[in-house]
Length: 153
Ligand SMILES: Cc1cc2nc3c(=O)[nH]c(=O)nc-3n(C[C@H](O)[C@H](O)[C@H](O)COP(=O)(O)O)c2cc1C
Image 1 (tube, rainbow, N blue to C red):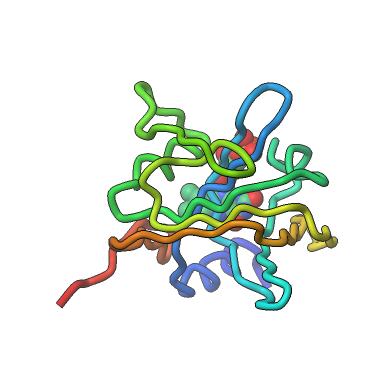
Image 2: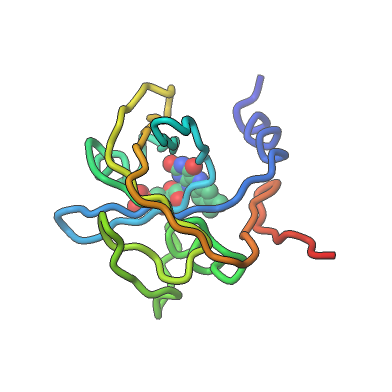
C-alpha cells in the first residue's frame, strides 16, 4: 500500500478546518489542523493529531491549547498557519481564557492538557475543554486536498 495514495483516500473524508493556538516562550504559536475530533462529553475531551515534524509538537507538550474552528471567511488564515505566512496577517488576535485566540472564528474550545499518545508519525494530543464558545456562520471545509465551503440551499 502506498502512503501517498492512502493520503488521497483519507482526503475523501471531508472535514472542517481549525487552527490550534498555544502559548510558547517565543509568543503564540498557531498551526492549521484538520485531524481534530471530539472524544468525550464527561469529561469534555477533544483530540488533535500532530505531525512529529512540526514545531507544534514541542509547543503542545504538556501545554494548554485553543482549538479555533475556522469559518468560510478565514481560508487565508488557514493558509497562513499552514506554513505560507501572509503579510499582512489575515486575522486579529483576541484574548481567550487560556491564551490568545483568532478573532471571529466559528467556535473555540480552550483546553488544559489531558494526555498524549503515540500515533505513529503523529502524536495524539488530548485536551480537557475548560471553556467553549460558538458563533453563527458557515464553516471552512477541506476535501480532497482543497478548501471548500458548505453548499447553502
Ligand atoms: C487543511 C490543512 C490541514 C492540516 N492538518 C494538519 C494536522 O491535522 N496535523 C498536523 O500536524 N499538520 C496539519 N497540517 C499541516 C500544518 O498546518 C503545517 O505543517 C504547519 O506549517 C505546521 O506548523 P509548525 O511547524 O510551525 O508547527 C495541515 C495543513 C493544512 C493546509
